[in-house]
Length: 180
Image 1: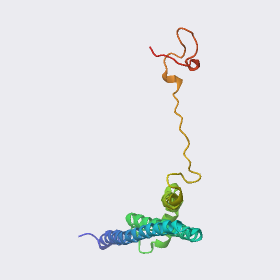
Image 2: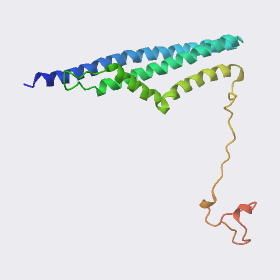
Image 3: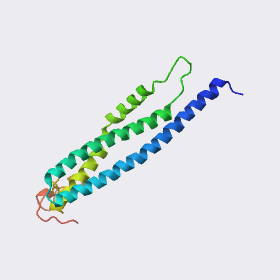
Image 4: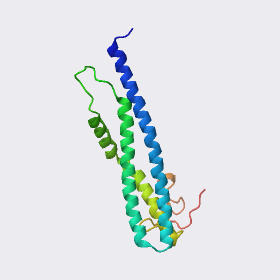
């Protein structure tokens, strides 16, 4: 039989992982509800834009920005809880204790500082603004997102002969070069 400290240590870490998994699953359903609220708010904004209620649309957009900031924070907090739960190890001596608040704050700060942490928020906000824009400007890109013509050119390094064998002119100067 294993010593009591060993079995309780493994048991505590296992219970911690289970608790954080349950909490994370509960948080995922709340995050899904926030996404649904965003979709409803986007639909309301489109309806308001159709009625030319610009002030109300702007107010709703400000609320959406706040909702997305809270959504982002809640997503990071959920990920921090899951991460701490998966990496948790019970202290080796009874005098040591785990400062869960500090562990969670540290993990939350790292997740929030990650470069990709703002991407989902920006994508959802762009979708919201694009839906409003499309009410009166369907088919036109929003301001600042105009698509420029793409000009494709080939490099001369793919051409084996860079001069015409007959005229000895560079191929780039020929108006209608012919391949052999």
